[in-house]
Image (cartoon, rainbow, N blue to C red; front, side):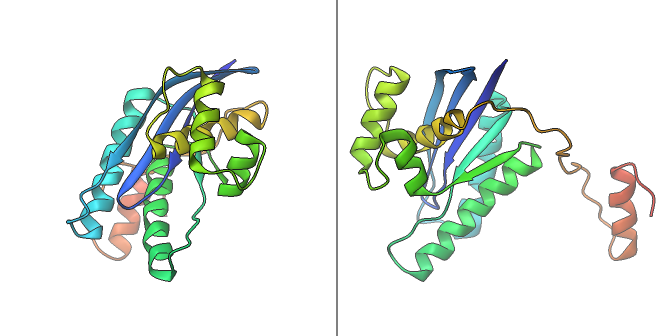
Length: 191
């Protein structure tokens, strides 16, 4: 059974994405890219842009599973906080679309794709290119995202997880208990 997986390498300035199809032990490249976010804009605007653009990619490629790289920062607490917000935005977008998500640490991705947990970005890109039979190395962040997707593919069979319900698209305008009631009605439940 073929399963489509999207890998995400989150960032507040650049977010890499890569889509692969997994059919048993065969993994096929579908597409990849990098979402370039305007660094001159407020973080709230960049995160909103990230959510919309990631949602468009999900709509276009219709993945059934997602894999996201964990936060890894060497530049300090502020960088970690901002990167964590971008990762949270990606996780929220994936969750709202009802996709089951697996998270991988940077060293786990490097270990599974290259055989060494301390591999450099160029080595990761080279292995991604070789494993997927690509004509050239993808852009750095896209290569990382494809590596994350490959990590999920290497984990073995990717069953579709049922029971993950996307949130309703209805946005209640009422406040307090009325808002809770409107949300419950939108979900088909009673309070």
